[in-house]
Image (cartoon, rainbow, N blue to C red; front, side, top):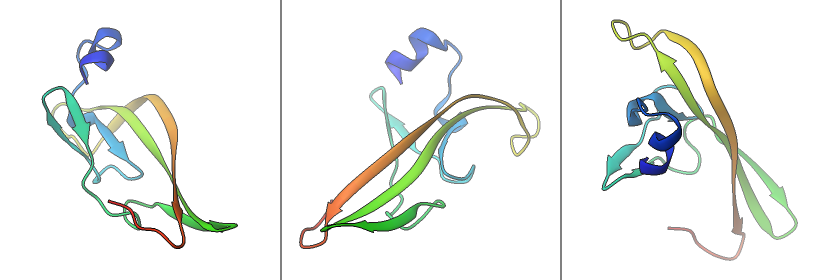
Length: 91
């Protein structure tokens, strides 16, 4: 979050979500962490060879200050991917 605020000074952790606007993270010590599971927040799951591939989008939206469920604009969207070996585990 510290680096993001260099570009977007008013950035709030509550304006960044994973997949759907109810999947927000928690900011601690300048870092934004998402606690949701791999099969939550509209995350897709596919198989590629020996790996399970989870894909989603990280979104930074401008929300209405009075009605936070209203999104006024999107600042950016970034695709994220997590590949997990089918014979392994993830934390």
